Image 1 (cartoon, helix red, strand yellow):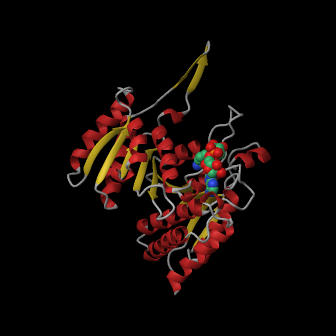
Image 2 (cartoon, protein in one colour):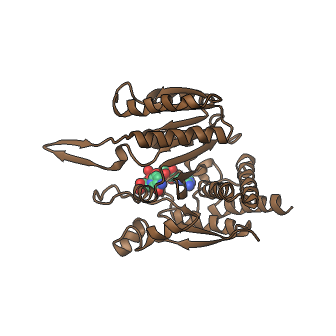
Image 3 (tube, protein in one colour):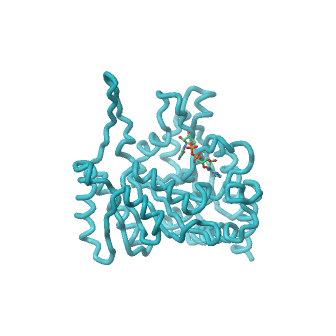
Length: 345
Ligand code: NAI
């Protein structure tokens, strides 16, 4: 038996718990040897306890090998309620938000294989805002250190995963100083990577080109807000937010979660697509597999990835947002069956 991992689990709000249930069942049944340590957090927990995260929760999340998280609600009508996601990213130093998007034959609107790498700690998301005499302002914070860290991460990622091209997305024609700094760092750092091709696209043009010709993009590196918006745009091209997973990586910690939110409109109905959450678990296995040279985990992650592709492309067992009539549990069972067949014949 290989290494036993410890995984922090935040089940999430809305569709989170139903998606986490099936994901943990898959992880258990495919032979991922781990202790799952649940940490209470989120809006539902806040309503019961008055706290957004259980006491000592951050310390637990710092001790585990990785965190698997469901989506968390940030209520719009409670201005004092700060995003727990933003807090977790800051507390765990998760500066790189990595979102791999790959199209599915017969389902996706376009052919694409794009990894969006988004700076995860700064920009307008530092949440420093104020209002005086009817004038509101928000601070857009862009530091040289954070730009260097994220650009270097994206370049190394492209190199390590065999991508040929890295595109910087910004708006430095208007935001001369903040986005100008991001741009300057990008141009400075790419000089050390002769094997890669580089370009830059303004964020508005990037939105247009992503719709028209997504095949022109491979790795995109961008700031926090632009990355947040473009990720949903690319998820739309893939076919559904429910198909996409993400990794949030720092120097010492890593957290994995679906790209989508808590989807209150379909919560509790058993119809949410579990693939985004299961894909996040797959990204976690790949991360741990690489970090600990655990070939068994890499094998499970591969089998899981292939099973997801097969299930989506066969099109027999799909949730309603993809035109199917299967449930969350049906889709998860189908993925599990196919994964087990690949692993054990
Ligand atoms: P959302 O991503 O929850 O939903 C947008 C649309 O996509 C809805 O129509 C929803 O039904 C659909 N959708 C989302 N996930 C799906 C799935 N797995 N299967 C099928 N359809 C799915 O975005 P929304 O409605 O803007 O946000 C809801 C809440 O989630 C908000 O409180 C927001 O702050 C939070 N949120 C949390 C995130 C996180 O925890 N990382 C990320 C994004 C939003």
